[in-house]
Image 1 (tube, rainbow, N blue to C red):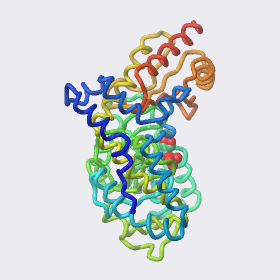
Image 2 (tube, rainbow, N blue to C red; image 1 turned 120 degrees about the vertical axis):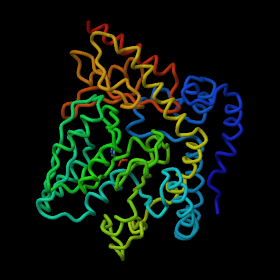
Image 3 (cartoon, helix red, strand yellow; image 1 turned 90 degrees about the horizontal axis):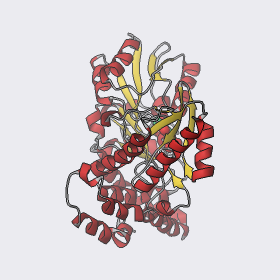
Image 4 (cartoon, helix red, strand yellow; image 1 turned 90 degrees about the vertical axis):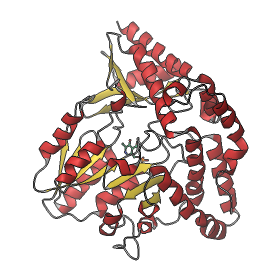
Amino acid sequence: MLGAGSIFQQLHAANFSLAEKNLTSKNPIDIALDADYWRTIQDAYTASKSDIVILNNGGVSPQPIAVQQALDKYNAFSSRGPSYYMWRQLDKGREPLRERLAKLAKVSAEEIAINRNATEALNTVIYGLDFEKGDEVIGTYQDYPNMIQAWRQRAMRDGLVYKQINFQFPIEDDDAIVAAFEREISSKTKLLHITHVVNWVGQILPVRKICDMAHKKGIEVLVDGAHSFGLLDFSIADLNCDYFGTSLHKFLSAPIGSGMLWIKKEHISKVWPLICNDQPKSSNIRKFETLGTRSFAIEQAIGEAIQFHESIGAARKEARIRYLKNRWCNQVVNHPKVRLHTSMKNEYACAIAGFSIDGMRPAEIDSILMSQYKIHTVGIEWENIKCVRVTPHVYTTEDQVDLLAKAILEIAGRKA
Ligand SMILES: Cc1ncc(COP(=O)(O)O)c(C=O)c1O
């Protein structure tokens, strides 16, 4: 069997342990400022050498070299004859991988299904639960479109009532967010759909508090963790939710096309598989993995991404990425024509932040950033949100976010 973790050992382990040895503090907040330490991480990504500055890691993230090479290695292994080497050999890596993902999420491996992205994970729950006509689900207009559409489709087909709250972000008040959900709850409400980190502007929602409130009323909670898993230092168990779906190709930097679904053990039997299974009412989480022929190479290379992530550590990663976000935001926040759409308080935001410039469309700013500064961001126009979204990652340099801040100030200055 091919050993997961071996490529990290060959490529990065020595550099990482040297960087570790040279640290002058063990505090993640201090380490966030240690340029030498982070240079080692940056060097582990080819994206750090890109000819453009990549600040849309919220869309999809690049992989470190170790993950890229693991993927190549597993693909080459499969290509020797996939019906044997992929289906009967690489396949043996799935259970150990499930254990590693479970350890990372601090939950039982019997609650983890491996799949291809957050859309698949969350749609498994959205389409998999039985509802009666008139039952209510509460989400928001600021959730991800694929999930909003799935709930609307269920409403159209099954007579489910799908209610949406309209938040005006940023909000720096947990109680106000919990109260907004609580106000919508009726005797018919069965489930709340919560986006842990709102993709448009990076708002972090107080998931634990919402779950505690909902459970007191016998209501379940589905969490969209596409932007929190691998970024924020938390365990799924801490959230006290019922269902959690995420992509692994965002902040975990796993290969593109990898995702994960967690379902609390006691709920597994009542969720129908999205695709099919010979025992659809089973309480075995593996019933959600009848996905047809797919790349086991992608799946197995997730192990290398976990190794890379753990070699940095969740607390350090969160602190560093938040530091980079705050670093550019602090440089532009006081310009009279620049508006931030994201909180500067640590508990309400981490990697993602949005900004706008008075009198300019987001797409126009995004286009100037690319054509004049070679900076890649994304212009957002969604519901009540109009901003340019910026997302650094662990391989982003301070110079890159400083360049972004300079560019924003210049563009805003020309508009004055
Ligand atoms: C909040 C949120 N949920 C879900 C998704 C869907 O992720 P994927 O395309 O990997 O299925 C995204 C993608 O950006 C997202 O931002």
